[in-house]
Length: 346
Image (cartoon, rainbow, N blue to C red):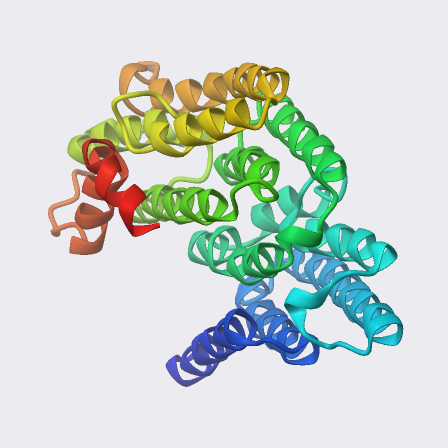
C-alpha cells in the first residue's frame, strides 16, 4: 500500500473515531462508525490473499448489519420520545436492539464468531487497530447509554464472553486467534461492570488496549504468527521474549502487574453491588484464559526448539527496538503501585 493511501486511511480512522466519541446526536455517531469501517477495510485486505479478502468481506457484512441496527434503534427511540440525543435512550426496545448492535460491533458473545476469523486474516498492525482503536467508539456509545441498558442481559453476555473467550482459546495454535479470544474474554470483564461503574469499563479498556498494543508490536518486531515459530525466536531477541512473557502474565491479570488492577477493581465493585456470585464466576472463568497466556509465555521463553537437522536458527536482531515498545512495556507492567493516583484521575 502506498504512503498516500495509508495516510488517507489513517486520517479517516482518526476522523471517524473522533466523530463518534465526541457526538451527542445518533446520526453523527453512526456516520463516524461508518467512516471507521470503510477506512479499515483496505487495511485488512491489502495483502490480496484470499484469507484477507474473506476477512474484509466478513468484517464489512457484520459491521454493516450492526450499523443498520444502531440506526434502527435510534430511529425507534426518536419516534417514541422525539429525542436524537445519545444519552436520552429510554425506549426499552431501542435499548435491547442497541445492546445487540454494539455487542456485534465489539465481538461480544453471542456475536463473536466473526472476530477471530477477521483477526486471523489481517496483518499484525491491522490486527492491533481492530483490537484496540476500532473497539473504542462502540465502548464510548455503551458508556454514554449505560444508565439505560439492561443489567441482566449485559451480565449474561459478559459471563458468556469470559467463558467462551477462555474456552475457545485453549486449543489454538495461531497467535492472532489466541489474541482474538483474549479480546473477547476481556470484553466480558468490561461489559459486566458498565451499568454499575462505567468509568471502570473505560479504565479496563485503556489498560487492555495498552497491553494488547505492546503484544502486537513485539510480535510484529520478531515476525511471529504461530506458536511453533514463537518457540524458535528466543535466539533472535532474548530481551523482547522475556518482556513478552511478563506482558502475557499482565494480560492474564496476575499481581503485581498492571493487568491485575482492573480485575481487582471490578471484583471489588461487583461485591459492593451484592453481586458476589457473578464476581466469583467471572474470576474462575479468567483461569481459562490464564492457561493460554501461560502457554504463550511458555512457548516464548521456556521451551527450547527441537534440535533437528531441518530446524533453522533465527538470526539475532541487531537493529534497536522501537522506543514505543519500551514505553508501552513499562506501562503494561508497572502501573499497579500508582493505582491510587489512577483512581483519583478517573
